[in-house]
Image (tube, rainbow, N blue to C red; front, side, top):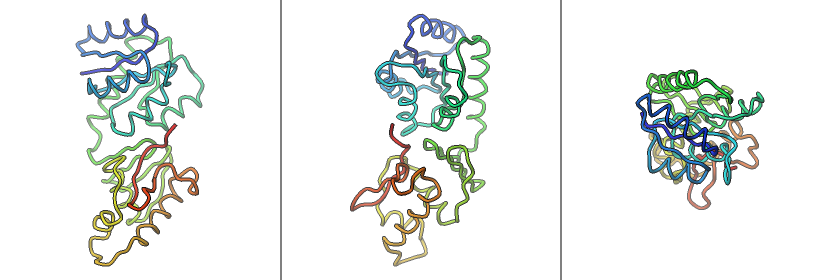
Length: 225
């Protein structure tokens, strides 16, 4: 398995790299946020161990950026032990949270557990930042909370979540969500975007998840830092 270790402390970074390498993993390392994102693209890891206290860009910023284009498992590794930090990390899309100091065998067990969850998870579960959509069960969770959607709202959100960051035109949305309608208008799309925002945005009047691409359509993205 390919693991990216993101840790600013050289001693801790080398220790983790040696230990995981001895366990048969291919290990890449990065010491700050920008290098972590570069390594993420170059190494295409199967899992990321991500420290929160990083220079230039902290772990929260790295996690948000990663979740814009990848669902790779992420375990936060940090000295922070406050419950609100753990909740924030999980809501941003982290899969687990390990507090320093930790036992290396415990870390290895957590890595194995996270990977097992991904291997057994249904392939039709989509996650974009704080939005998790289960197509098989027709369920949606936002920031850890269940959100009830109508069938049309669900299909609209599923379309946007299928290509995070892609701008869908109103015409594309009509074709995908209203396949039986020849004359569904942009106003229909606008109405359902408004309904979705009311249910999943922190502040529907200032949306950060479903973003309007002026004169074209809409895209779904995790909130920016």
